Image (cartoon, rainbow, N blue to C red; front, side, top):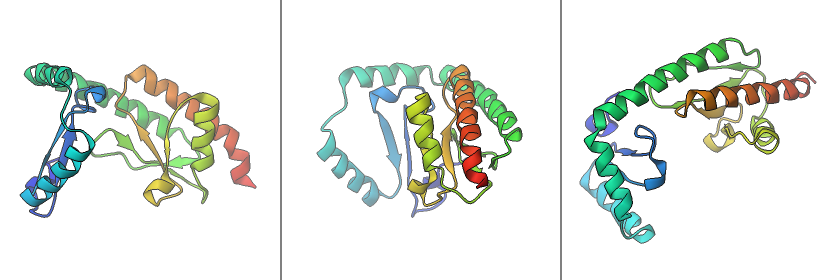
Amino acid sequence: MPPAATLSDRAISMTTMSKSYGLPGIRIGWIAGPMGMVESVRAVREQLTICNSVIGEAIAFAALKQRDVLLNKSRERLRRNLKALNYWMAHQDMLESVEPEGGVVAFPRLKRDASTEPICRTLATKYRTFAIPGYGFETDRHLRIGFGEETDELSEGLKRLKQTLDEYAPKLRS
């Protein structure tokens, strides 16, 4: 997808080394958009963190020098993970979803009118697996699932989500 900032002078685009490059710990990214907005973001950022870590900058520089190799590896993992997620979703009777057209996040919805908050809470406390309940996005029936991690980790997370959904199913039927 083209960056939003290239489509409108009222849009901004932000990205980081976190998702595509698999480097969330270095906390380095960038923003593009109208200069006034960029300056406002810079002013807030300067109040939160005065400067980047020198080590983080060196890691980002090294990663950007290998951009094509790292991004191709990420794309292949994401294709594999999206295929696994789509297969898993096709076999769920409590969830429905539209395949994401970009990014590393799916936003499936419960077929029944119920909150995903108890599901996400059980998933976190009992299975130490994390999905974000939809109420934070004003869509209570949805949950946010990231699929950018390693494929084995995604598979284990989906297995745990299925266990949680199976435990939660009787509560939905009542």
